Amino acid sequence: MKAGFIIAAMVLCAAVFGLIKYYIEKMVDKRISAYQNDLLEKHCEEVENMYRQTRGWRHDYHNHIQTMKAHLTMGNLIELEQYLNELDTDLTTVDTVIKTGNVMMDAILNSKISLAKARGIRVEAKAVVPKELAISEVELSLIVGNLMDNAMEACMKMEDAEKRFIRVYIDILKGQLYIYVMNSVEETLKRSGKLYLSTKSGKEGYHGFGLMRIDKVVERYHGYLDRQDEEGVFATEVMLPL
Image (cartoon, rainbow, N blue to C red):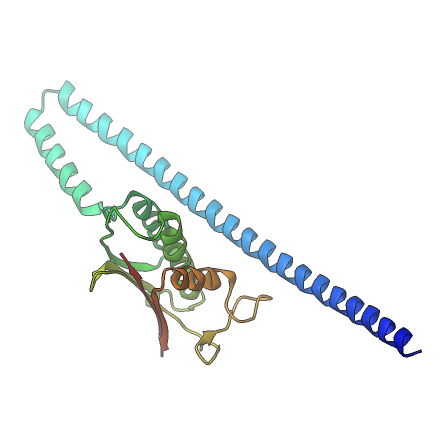
């Protein structure tokens, strides 16, 4: 009798454990799927933004060529030289491309900054990244990419577009790679201890997957991570050993 009761209890426990495991896996799969869809949407938006820029550049380039050909046809060499000088000055003025010294970081930063500006967000950025890193370029791009995505999402929630801004500073500090991203925020951020809660609709919980991935990378490399919020701003500091 007692043996039968024990067996029944074990079977019941196994069934309950199986159900719990099943529902946890379903929840995780659902969150991973939502995260992947979110990444795909962001990637598509970045590609569309770059495509619009490329079309604009082609249009401007065509107009410049036509103007210079007209000056050349009419023999207006002085006017042509003056036009070339003005064009050179204009190109120097609009050249806001970030050159960090690391090709992968150049790609991710310029892509995110271009998208932020297209959304009407004011961006200030300075970045210096060594070519040789202890951390993989993919993981570094993951950190910076997620920080920029979160900053843009926070900015776009602000009703006053004039107050939207992102500041990025990346450099070598005390023998480590220092990453600092600050952005404007409007709403009061929810937190429990040191953990910030996701504010995305339908995704509330301790950290979004993007923040969790940042945390894991920093922990893997025994780095330093700090998030702070004050009235109107949110900032993240990351330090990684070189």
